[in-house]
Image 1 (cartoon, rainbow, N blue to C red):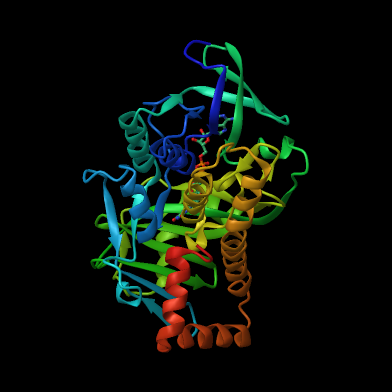
Image 2: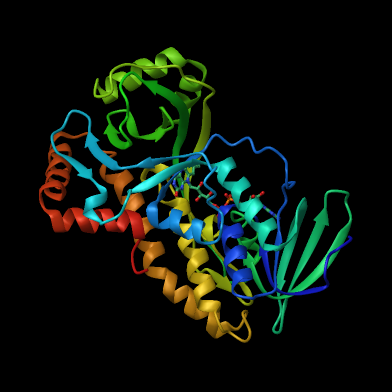
Amino acid sequence: MQGVPEHCEIVIVGGGPVGALAALRLARAGRDVTLIEARAQQAPLHDARALALSWYSREQLAAVGAWPDSLPCTVIDRVHVSQQDGFGRTLLQPEDLDLPHLGVVVDYPALTAALGDALAGAGVRVLWQTRVSSVRSLSRYATLQLTAADGSEALLTSRLVVLAEGGALAETLPGIRRHVHDYQQSALLAMLSPEQPHRHTAYERFSARGPFALLPHGEQMMLVWTRSHEDAQRLQQDGDALLAELQQAFGDRLGRFSAVGERAVFPLALRQLNRVSSGRVVMIGNAAQTMHPVAAQGFNLGLRDAVGLSEILAGAADPGDAAVLRRYSAARRIDSHAVVGFTHGLIRLFDGQHGVVRALRGLGMGGIDVLPPLRKAFASHLVFGVGT
Ligand SMILES: Cc1cc2nc3c(=O)[nH]c(=O)nc-3n(C[C@H](O)[C@H](O)[C@H](O)COP(=O)(O)OP(=O)(O)OC[C@H]3O[C@@H](n4cnc5c(N)ncnc54)[C@H](O)[C@@H]3O)c2cc1C
């Protein structure tokens, strides 16, 4: 395999948004970083996801040059949380946190491309179209087995390996177990045109048929609806049925919805590791935790993993040292567990359709809405995470 060094200080496996951000931050801090990504650099990414990012996340991306002015995005100025057939609603606004906007919506492929350009601009070494097939941690370094697109193989050693590849490699490491909760549900994604302008409001609604988010996306809105696998498949095929069911669940707040483009379905599960490091290997982003998208927290949390790791590694003589990685695990534990617990709790709480449960939810949302300190705490939790 050509152009591959035999030894690196830090290797990051996976050039998704979390791995790419970690690589940019570590390279800026003067670290010798190699990023390994299975995908080709210029290959168009077919991924229907639009990510709702907190303003904090957007600022972190801008700080490493991965948020050019040309990046197509839509700001979120309000988040409206409500439930179908029940009273109580919460409205979060930028004033709650003294921010210019609450967040921003960006397409996953566009963000990934912007990060790719930033990596090239910063001169970070990236091995595109290279897959890591195994990782092993030894006492003084870790080893990685790589396979390039042409089938050639190489062995690499590194003082620290950061797994940001979504998760498959972590389970091969000693002491690592993954807790999995299969929601037996899928997320159905669809682009819709509302009759009335969305005014940069993101809606989070807990409907009798499952929770959904409607995110402002240009003039349109991206729907992310949690449904049974069967319903999601059915509505993926049948746009008229989707519009009718959505209209019933959402009401006429934005008039009639129309123009459904291509739809996509993602099966949903919660996956969380018992520990985020093993020897000289550390897991960040989806490799450490994958969660239900209803609260739009997955990448926001993964991004804070990348920021937290680069902060802990600042000045560390040996980045793979056990004490350094213990400090990282401890620093990220509260945020990670709080966000995963909050998201999972939300699903459980809003799953029940019993009248009493609905009334309690209404009281909760009404309480958050009329008590500014509570509303600020809730908004701050969504935007900045916990314990950061
Ligand atoms: C439907 C849906 C909606 C979502 N909406 C939101 C939202 O609104 N807001 C939000 O914050 N989050 C959201 N998320 C979560 C968000 O998409 C993830 O948290 C985020 O993509 C995680 O980024 P990552 O870089 O950790 O992993 P990934 O995005 O999975 O990237 C992993 C990368 O690793 C590469 N790779 C994999 N295996 C290997 C290997 N062996 N060797 C080399 N490279 C490898 C892959 O090619 C890929 O590029 C949503 C998720 C879903 C499913």
